[in-house]
Image (cartoon, one colour):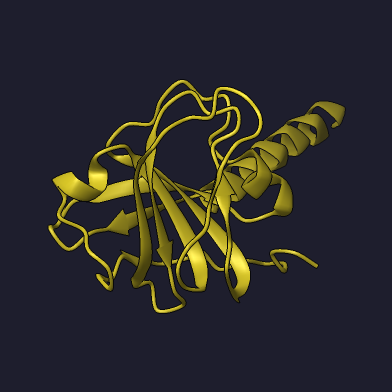
Length: 154
């Protein structure tokens, strides 16, 4: 009986951790038909960490930052090891600002990249992605956010 309970607990732990992980990645679709898998940054801690200390990002990878409300959200490249393209998206998922090939910041002070318009989402992509895929202001990026069982930030 003890063994069955332990096995059940192990199974439930693995199942629950697998379900939680499913909400961490979504598919993002671009106008040219290309798609990328985006890691979600939903909490303050996840947004602060971003892509820091990672070695690279592939063309089919992205990081999508979700914010509680549309606002001017600035970004910087502290502790980054590679350049990226950054897209700011409004609540309708339209591109409202683009920064191309933003270089890593080797030492303080690091510059901030401030969008020209309020955004609800920020999408970080491999450097050169915007040019390669012909992205422009007001293009719509398609994605479906997972249903969140709890508020993103209390």
